[in-house]
Length: 477
Image (tube, rainbow, N blue to C red):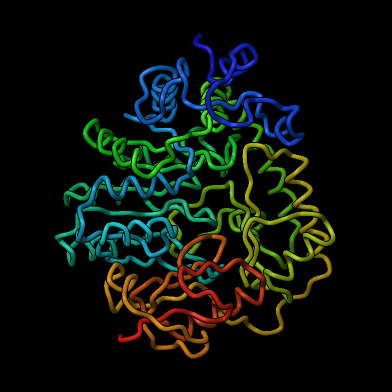
């Protein structure tokens, strides 16, 4: 069996004098942090270790192996996260001025691609599930209508699964898009684990998507910033490689590349065992969740098997805990988890918190989360009044995004921005979905949502305005 990239690094680095980058020269005596960060096997693209953007040796073999493991025609290693895959994929299948159909809950990287390539989006808003106040599945009817109204569109871009684990009917959606000649890009950043076990739904590769972007690091045992791009055809793979050479670093970290290769090998050799352990841990959490009286967990406990409005399906790695039916909100629940149980959730909203699981979780870790929820739940009461809906708002576009992004602008206090056309993108992290983008009209719903996120100390990223509480709007629109 060919040696892994990690094995080759461990063999070669101790005996080779590095008269090349990086500047630490693998001298871990130079500074203590270098040893901690595994600098002793940190190299650049040298003979024997291949070149990421012109792979013909060990990296080519590793990417071909990944394609086999994930069931793809071609697979590319990404060391700039899913973002570089999204940017490259969209540029690979569009020309400036093209129309694209896309779900409005796409990641900010999709919107950056729209601006960079001067694309014209037709937004499809996902359906809503009001029991949990979350974005639900994409409606096939809405996609059909968008295709009928925008026959000039060349591409469909969708996100599946969502941050909360909601999935749409990808096989049917993709077949529909292909019948109309659309290339389909699926942001499956949160779904690199899908398709390997009957416990989890199938993935976008098996559903027939043309390009699929996955973040390995989100749920699988790989270092942060590692991702994959799967491509369906030879011609598209050639163009994808060309675009990756534009957007991705020319100095890829071999530590990250070795992490991807090692993760793929683990899936190849031990997937049944690893996924069985993960399933067992999730089922242990389910047993704990059965004891909850006020908190509700999407797809777990008493909620398992429940028919959910506008939800085609769920993938079980996400533990979304709703506070809509009790006397605290998501922000209060997160603080209790931190202060009393040393548990840090992935995402916090006014309506709940998201506990994000991964292959590294165990029965012990997920029972610990379940026990914490049970203790908190035991002192809660039912909500005295129905809580106000506070979800990511719907806004409408007035000016093309690429035009608005470069137009003259002024800065206003956010409270005074209602009715103005935005000149910047404003994103709440997590999940990294823009609340408003250039060209869209700020409304009261969006203002209230952003103020609530600020009060909760969520990270709010703005592309232009520098002063807290202010936003950039078009001067002349």
